[in-house]
Amino acid sequence: MLYTTVIMAVLSLLSQSLFAQLILLPAALSLYMIQSREERLRIPFRAALFLTLMTLFFHLFLRFETDWFRAFFESALWQRAGFFSSRNLLLFLLMYLFVHLLKSRDLNGKLRRLDRFVRTRGLPGSGMIQALVIALIYRDIVEDEIRSLQQLHRILGFEKPDRMAEKLRWYGQLILPLIAAGLERSEQVGIALSSRGFNSGN
Image (cartoon, rainbow, N blue to C red; front, side, top):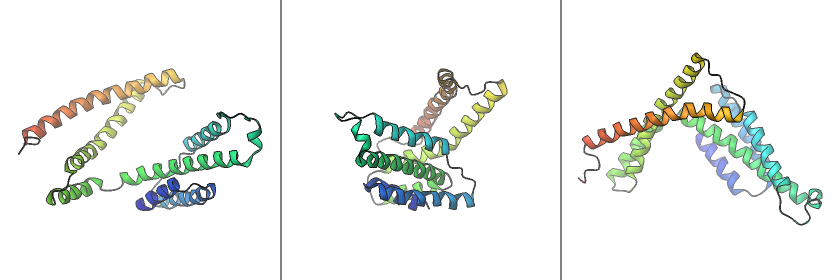
């Protein structure tokens, strides 16, 4: 299903017609239904609706044309707005599903095998693959830290606010400890790599 999701995203990007986007959209929803049978997966309706309405608003009203009002009675404007709105909605759903499918895959093992294949044949790109392996190792640790910080906020009585300014402050209280922990962790990883002879020129 992961490859199907990628193929559908590529088709959505390559197709330039509203009809093609409207055909791919039910196919993407069917992928959600198939995946939700295997494990619980909720479609982010609120975020998808917000993205679609914002795209419609930008293409319908934020235009710089001489006959601004007359364009509302032409089909070209509505086709263009419908095309971009449906394509953004489709790509959003596919990317959300893609990220969900990535979490359930053993990407770490696949990247290690790819790194072994690249190094044995002398191909470039081994350093980038090793960096991705290290990033995937610490991805779960970062997710656990975020959940721990959110739980700590709930214990201390800090609920998620409704106002935008207070939301930014609330998210800042989550992000700043993560940045500090990430810098400390990267320093530890750098020391460990240097002690094992990485980047020694041999």
